[in-house]
Every structure is written in structure tokens, then in C-alpha cells.
Image 1: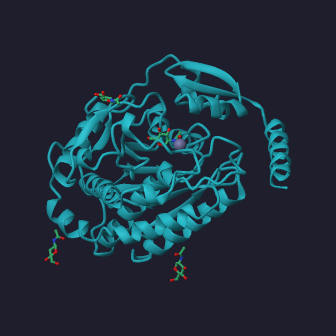
Image 2 (image 1 turned 120 degrees about the vertical axis):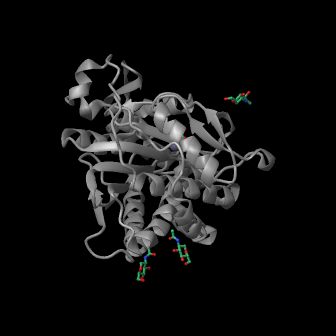
Length: 375
Ligand SMILES: *[C@@H]1O[C@H](CO)[C@@H](O)[C@H](O)[C@H]1NC(C)=O
Ligand SMILES: *[C@@H]1O[C@H](CO)[C@@H](O)[C@H](O)[C@H]1NC(C)=O
Ligand SMILES: *[C@@H]1O[C@H](CO)[C@@H](O)[C@H](O)[C@H]1NC(C)=O
Ligand SMILES: CC(=O)N[C@H]1CO[C@H](CO)[C@@H](O)[C@@H]1O
Ligand SMILES: [Zn+2]
């Protein structure tokens, strides 16, 4: 009975897969593009190939010169910390139980695959939580935007705290809210606890605590945004929509810091934070070293993760400087991602709290920083 049901479900999946198996154009390296069928994306992922799905962005200005290295502006990021007192006060509010509860709820959605109904429901739930935790901020001092995508229903969420002095400078803390199972994405459970629910919950906790700081009247000089992207797993689709639209509107992102997979520790005695040095902005990476050294109680270790390995790739692609931190060196990250075994019990909430501290520290330092463009 069971196996007959399985055959039936498999057939249905196959039909669904064939039905939507259009050709996509993927960028797998700088200026390096290939054409694959939608169904072949999973194969690339399994082989660890990162990519940006640029099919729907072929008319953007940068698309025409795929070989051009983008002229990244460089900024004078802080070389030392100046918000230690605020940080000391606020970091005690980072709450592991809160993080556990949020992640447990977030993972209770059958899957957060961006094309599935529960993927949409999970975005609605996240939006409600965000409304709740930013409720302490006075009206008008925070905006919560559902960023709709044309081709799928799961929206991205943008939380914006407008700057009071130089609102045109945007500081962005990013994470993605979808999850992915590589076999029949819509039909098999994908709790996606670590990939990349942990990044979402890390960002959420930093936002919850930062909201209290704002509520106390500490409004930022620069505009601070927390982003929760849809459809990272489809090839950075959600973040590409967001940053391409920012580029088109001539918005100025002065720093984008991505968190993705923040909860897994392979060896407790060797606990560290992975700081990604390839396809990221060197000056912003140096700033993150300052932040981790000052505000985390574990060290960082430099690592690489290849082209477009998370949403910071979309920021860089649009000419905005970005950095990316993850739970460890790339080769020591969670081996259960993209499967049904990516579950809560395999994660460390102490470790996630360290990541939340790093996010909080970075936000505090950049919120009132006087940005100067160097080149
Ligand atoms: C930290 O908290 C203490 C006690 O509540 C308060 O007196 C102090 O002003 C706070 N410092 C900052 C920088 O917020
Ligand atoms: C948000 O707050 C309301 C009112 O306190 C509560 O009923 C609701 O369950 C909260 N939503 C979530 C998703 O926690
Ligand atoms: C993991 O990467 C680090 C540096 O990136 C390297 O020193 C180490 O040998 C690698 N370990 C494994 C198991 O491949
Ligand atoms: C694209 C994807 O699978 N999502 C990312 C989640 O985080 C890990 C670690 O950074 C990335 O390797 C994945 O690519
Ligand atoms: Zn993933």
C-alpha cells in the first residue's frame, strides 16, 4: 500500500517537474554562464556548484557586460569599536529560548521551498513575528515591506529603520527564509533548521534586541535594514530581485552582511565563526574581523565558499560591498543541509547566540558611522 502510494506520488512529482522544466540561464562564476533545465539545478547543488539564476534579469545594465569586473566602491569602515557600552547593555537581552522557540516554529512548516504553499505560509508567519517584535518601536520609525516576486508567491521581507541624518546610506543585514530538499522539493519535508532557518532566526533575534534600542530613542543616522529573502535556493532569485531593484532605483547600499547557517558546531572544542574571503568585499571583511574580535567570545577563521554561495552574491553582483559569515569553515559546515535530517537537535543555540551578537555589534557600529567613499 505504502509503496504503491510512493509510486503514485513520484509519478505526480515527475509530471509536475516536467511541466515546469524550462531552460534557465545560470551564472556559475564571474562572466561564466550556462544553460540548464530547472530540474538540473538540484544536480549542480549536490555537486556544490553555487549559481545566480539570471534568466529574469537579462535586461539589467550589468547583464550586458558579463565579463566586466564590477567597480566596487570602497568605504572607510570602522577600524575599532565605539559602541561597547550599548553593546554590553543590549547583548544581555539575546535570548536562546526565544531563538529556540522561533526556530522550532519556523521549522514546523512542512517545507519552506519557495514554490510550495507552506513556503508562502512560512513567510506570512515570519512577517507576523517581525510585526510583533518591532511593536515597541514608535509608529513611523519602522517600515515593514513585503517585497513581492513576479514568478512565485513566497515574498521577501524588508524591515527598514530610516536614518535620521544620512538616510540615503543603507546598511543591510541579510538572511534567507526558504529551505530546500534536493529530492522533489515540494513533496518531501524540509525542516531546513540550519540551512538556512538558523540565519533567519539569528537576524530576527538581533532585530528584536535592536528594536528595544530604537524604542529607547536611539535612532540610527544611516538607514538600517534587515532583509529576509525568499528563494535563495533557486539561485539567489529573491535577493537578486531586491538588489537589482535597489540598483535601478539608485539606492546606495554601503554595507551588506549576510548570515546563512549559523547553528552547527562539528567539534565543540574547535568552535569558531567562518568568515568568507572570496567574492566578498575585503574592507568589509576586515571590519567583520574587528566586530568578531570585540563582540563574540569565539574566534573567526577565514574560509572560502565559491561563487554565489549565498545572497551576498546578489549584492556584490549589483555593485554593493558585502560580507558573509557562517557557522564554521566551509568544509566543517553541517552535512545534513538540504535533507530531512536538517533538524533542531543537531544545532547549538550557544553558537547561534554568538552569531546574533556579531549581527548586533555590526548594526550598532554601522548605524551611526559616518560613511566616506574612498575610491
Ligand atoms: C546601560 O545601562 C545602564 C543601566 O541601565 C544605563 O545607566 C546606561 O546609560 C546604559 N548605557 C548605554 C550606553 O545605553
Ligand atoms: C503576535 O502577537 C499576537 C498578540 O500578542 C499574538 O496573538 C500572536 O500569536 C503573535 N504571533 C506570533 C506569530 O507569535
Ligand atoms: C578545511 O579547510 C581548511 C582551510 O580552509 C584546511 O586547512 C583544512 O585542511 C580543511 N579540512 C578538511 C577536512 O578538508
Ligand atoms: C544555496 C544554498 O543551498 N544555500 C546556502 C545555505 O548556506 C550554505 C552555507 O553558507 C550555503 O553553502 C548554501 O549554498
Ligand atoms: Zn541550502
